[in-house]
View 1 (tube, rainbow, N blue to C red):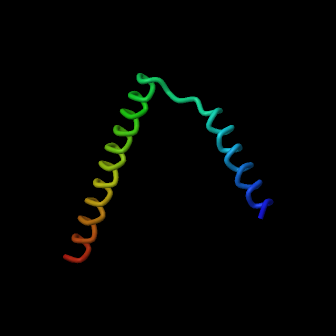
View 2 (cartoon, one colour):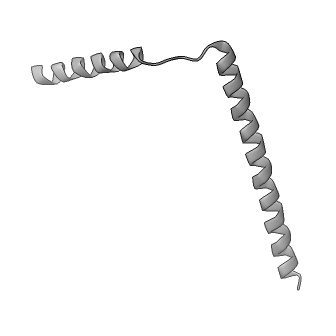
Length: 65
């Protein structure tokens, strides 16, 4: 039972050490990254919508023959 407790303590001390290595972005950097994610998401969504529209139109054209 003591071995399990030692493993838990070792695990949590490792987690604490890793959290100490994290470099958090400042406010300006976080804002710029958020804007980049939103823009990439919108552009990706538009590309997917165009591909979907083209595929739908192509299938409708083929089935109308």
